[in-house]
Length: 368
Image 1 (spheres, rainbow, N blue to C red):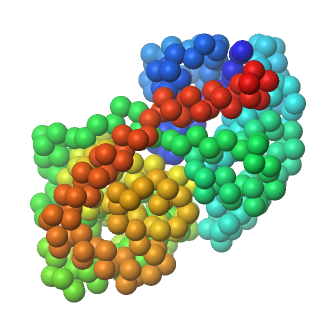
Image 2 (tube, helix red, strand yellow):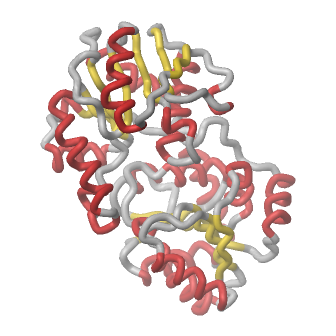
């Protein structure tokens, strides 16, 4: 069987989409799949895909939007592709058979977090194409249920393939932690939030809860916020700025990929009580790097954390505050979470993701 995978997101900034694609290719290579795989790009591959065990084909196009909808299916047919794998809005074609990965449907569940244009494009593009799609892949049972509820997809057309931490991610050494601390001028013990400042990341409540926890328990920690501004970020930025002026927080802005393990490995607590996640890759990345984690009791996060993190109600500042005090005030508790997180991370691998994804391809192609 010949499988084509759209890889454009792998050349962009580090996002969940990019981690997913690079992880899937890494897993397929590790698995040693018997099928022929062609990776499709609209421009020359970057170092992220080099060296690559699979054929890489660059198919230029003057229009990025038309590339996936028209150019890619036409080229895939010419190359004899049996299954074409894309993300989110799929092309409306029946040849080759199309599989699309949809990581979450927040644009439908929480439309207020998106611009009118973005949520319209996502919902209508996906809704109109789904009747012709052979299968949908997603990372969690939570998102599978959401997809079935929102789009009425039958269970047999939705495949859950849990993801894993960024390929090659390892716990940082003491030297790595010290280097990152020095580079960013971090001296005090700190708790960490890492992510784009956007509504679903719940930054204003995180900041408020941390301020309250520091005041209640006399904690010496600072809250380090690492991440760039996203859409509708004014409220989050205002909360971080105010806490920074009060000496409670520091906003580092965008942090280079190579500094992330050191930041995670050096923190006493990773705060990730977001309002919704389709999977929650940062939880696994924190586990790998040895960070104790507080995350949410909603959406996919309990599914990923698996009992290795403190779970809170993300809509409740008191719930987040109590957990912060509980973890930062107890050295033994932090160590227990570190050990549990490291163990939990070993239960996820890109090889397993690739194995489950290959089963989906084979079902779609009639080989199972």
